[in-house]
Length: 123
Image (tube, rainbow, N blue to C red):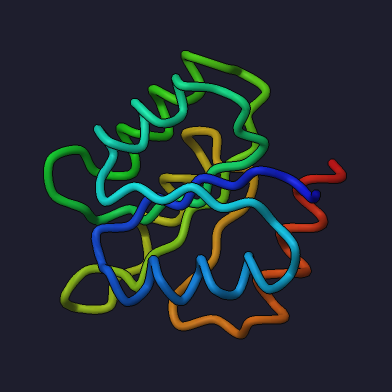
């Protein structure tokens, strides 16, 4: 079994698509609808990498990344975002500054995600 990946995204379709892509590629996937749920599932243990959206209700991704880093400085994190309503992707730059190992703008290609995932897990 490949790595255990936690997907945190409030969009059901995005989460389902990511989950299907990663499961098909052989990864074990755990899903969460927001940062609070994601942090609870992360604390339950044995997560190798977290993919988190940035703009979410309850607890947004930037705060989630900070709390993940406080819990485990070595956890691998990929931040994804389609930007805000105006398409502003500056959140991805902030995510990188806060400790995301890599960032990916939506929409992205399946192979782009899998290649990035592989690189981050090997780093």
